[in-house]
Image (cartoon, rainbow, N blue to C red; front, side, top):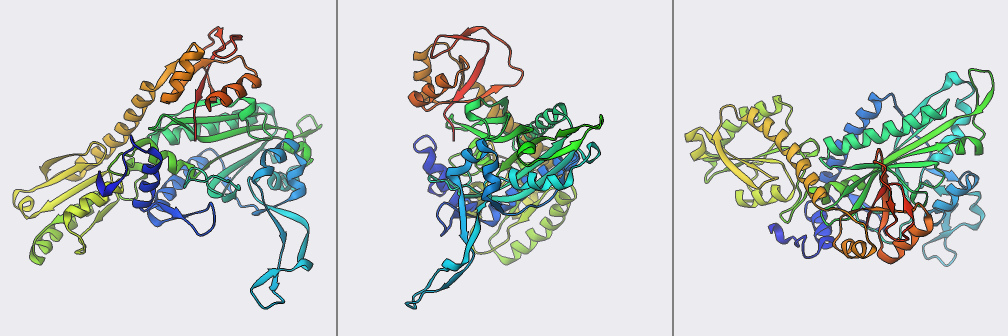
Length: 490
């Protein structure tokens, strides 16, 4: 173990918390339940943002920004939506403090009570659809394809950095359409964008599916999701896309004149991913030595470390590194040359291993004499000695290999920990071991709740395009048309 990290096999939760801290990703803040995302962690999030933002814009979406505060009356308009978020709301009741009459500190000024309480946004459907009322009059105004990068507050009682915090960063797409078909197509399209990002940027294989009514977003007609498996066998919901029907258009009276010259309510979607993706990235790939980052999201893709004894040695090595680093950057590879003299090379090797840098190049005087470098890959913890000539093209190939290898490894892990279950006894035994359980369900929320109460397992999704297969519910024995994915989850 590097840096004294706990072992995943002994205490997965402690391993995760320590890794987040030691790798310099984030830390708990002075505000209960909130986190400070440190520069290295934020650099990963920025790369996620950049890739997703490009994907959104490639599918016709534009960025905008809406208020942080939601009037209480807005939230109350959509009953199911209000009920779903009520317990997590942070509420602003006053707008001013004043000096305490006893001279000690500040107190809330009772004269500064708001006429209407404001909710710090737990999500933005209501404030956005109130705005859309002014934007939409005709079918020619549609579709509206808007995305917002923002922060969200949901007053969680039990928090864990990245996975569940009172405040987190995310993007939320909110679109309006002229027809139901267009809105459903948009919902499914954006789910596909999320799956593409998870698979090809994060190297995390995901199952695309639909949530049950119990697990559906409050106010949605249907919620689509991507579900990933972490290394402890638990599921993590990595992204959701919601078909909202005409629910929000009705409560905010967003009507338009359609092509037949008739008034109709607009059709809506919303979709989002958050800094929870950071948790997924950590837990899907990392090991007892530290972070393992897919090259596409690594802030530093290659670190070059000089191995030297004297200032003269360092000068000679640095002279050779300069053109090497330029070659790598010319290939679009992010490079760091760590020639700092505060730590020895062995310490640096361990530190960059902990921080998940995909490729490490070691270069000493013997290497310069031999015309070679030591090339180490983080995912397999292997190294080889190669000629320095042509190393840039080899590193580029290696980064692609690492990206693919991480996905291949995570997919193999998921397949090895996915089980077809047909009896309740097997279900209760296997759920203790973790993994995805493919089992029949009778389709009733009552059975779903009983399974959750007895095993802490939830239906993660009904997989899209899953084959029909007649069977009997694993719990009730009643008829079932297809299997669903059960798991314990974050």
